[in-house]
Amino acid sequence: MAYGPHGGFSSVEFWPVSNTGTIAEGDMVHWDEEGQYITTCEAGDTPCGVALDNSNQPTSDAGNKILVETSTMALFEYPADTGTITAALIGKTMDVGGAQSINIDTSAQDCIYVTNVRLTESTKTVICRIKFDDSFAGIA
Image 1 (cartoon, rainbow, N blue to C red):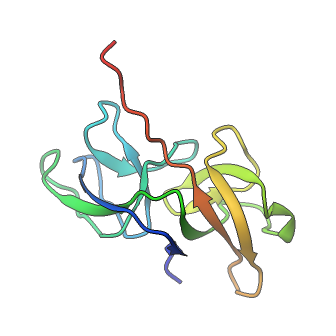
Image 2: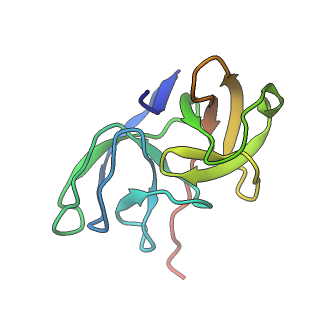
């Protein structure tokens, strides 16, 4: 099963990729430390979008650009990084577990809002909205 976009209202932007690694379609992405290039999320990161394309590791920053879903009204589907997904998660907030997973046991960033769960598949998943970090680094 492919994880990532699952419906809802869409807003897509074309963003430059960091030279620090590859990005897969469906990966949650965030801005690098300088706020100039996107890279994949790790546990505890606050995403700025979800990749709609694959990107090999570019040889230089901005060597590739990919389409990124940025709408907070879009729906996404991901498995839990660990733990058991249950209907009790609906209406709760939690954190990123990895580029394509949700940490259903933590709510420090509270950037994932669960709207539904899929319990009938072999891999149980959450259907969620993501509160993307729309802040940029200041000059000071």
